[in-house]
Amino acid sequence: MILKIGGSAITIKDAKEPTIDEENLDRITQEVSKYNDDLIIVHGAGSYGHIYAQKFGIGDVIGNVNDHLYKLEGVCRTQASVQLLNYMVCTKLHEKGVPAIGIKPSSFIVTDNKRITLCDTEVIKRYVDNGFVPVLYGDAVLDYNDYMKYAIISGDQIIAYLAEQLKADRVILSSDVDGIYTDNPKTNPDAELLEVVTKDSEYVTTANNDQSDVTGGMSGKVKELLDLADKGIQSQIINAEVPGNIQLAVSGQKVKGTIIK
Ligand code: IP8
Image (cartoon, rainbow, N blue to C red; front, side, top):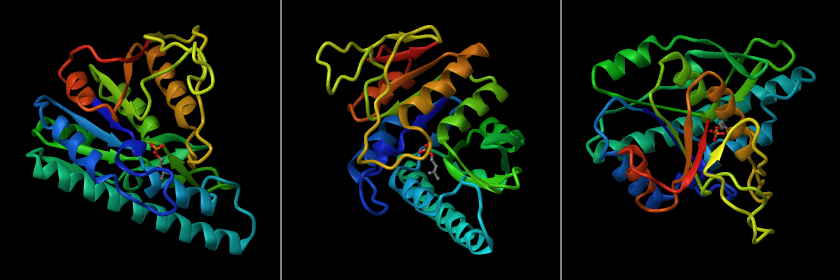
């Protein structure tokens, strides 16, 4: 099983600087610890990644030499910040008895035009086979496109890639909303949660303007998951902010949310 823990659930995403949501991290890792079969966790970056990625314009076309120097600093700062978050997530998982192994995506993934092209999953697979729980995350990586040189990959792109390569049985993506709606539930009281979304569904994904999200928020997630569904792997979006949801979902029980197939 591949589980994405949304960055908006474990960090305060609209904070002005990287800020952890201690309470949620503690609860979510506790819920995850109830699962004891093959598992890969991927977490989002929340305020640990998006603030830097946006400030330094990582993934934008590089202008002059000074701009390149600025981007170098940005890649360093983004990587260091999300790695720190990963360390905190893994440490919390260890406290709950989960054999979590932090794996730095930028050390073995290269993108081409922001899509993963180089990524050897053998190490991840071997960790899983030995009973570990690899924990990856959205990161700033090298990109083969010489105009941009660097890119941000979301945890969502990573889960879709790993799910396909490692033939995952189940993919769960937890975020800070219940799922996908027919319309914006904040502005339309008649908006309904869709239990199932396919590429033919009519749905609306909302953006929260207070939060910097360089990887496309919910619409980016749905796109990744619809592509995955096209390859025959269905997934489920659930709300990690609701206590008990992750535990129910990982144990295969019914949870409010949206299935993408
Ligand atoms: O939070 C974004 O990953 P996401 C990664 O899964 C960075 O979209 C570094 C902003």
